[in-house]
Amino acid sequence: MPRTREESQFVPNLAPRDDEIVLCKTTDSALTGTNLRLILRNMNIENVVLAGIFTDQCVSSMVRSLADESFNVVVIEDCCAAGTDELHRRELEIINMIYCHVLSFAELREVMKI
Image (tube, rainbow, N blue to C red):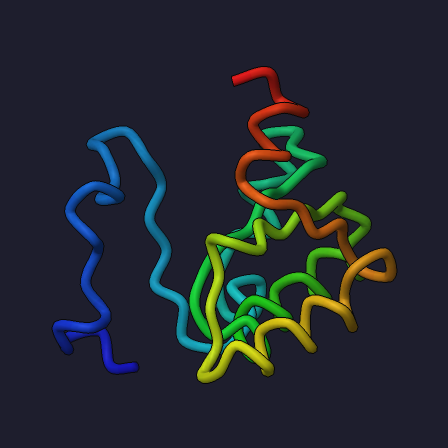
């Protein structure tokens, strides 16, 4: 979506804070066309948790890109969406245990003890 559209704006509760890194993503995977790969490596980040819209497009592309770069990836199934529930569920089935681990938000909280 064009970044000037209302649908492309941050949800107020998830808006970045002053010290947080913000990237302008222009492709399905945020690793393509940005310096995110370099940022993650320079910060010694090995584990990435993903949430987002278009599970079957952007989320899946990002998962595959991160996995190809040897990051450990977790996708939060109830924090993602696709055009239909069927597309969402099917894509999660495809990527789970091959490129990432799919967890619910409650499962992530339990694993992270938060």
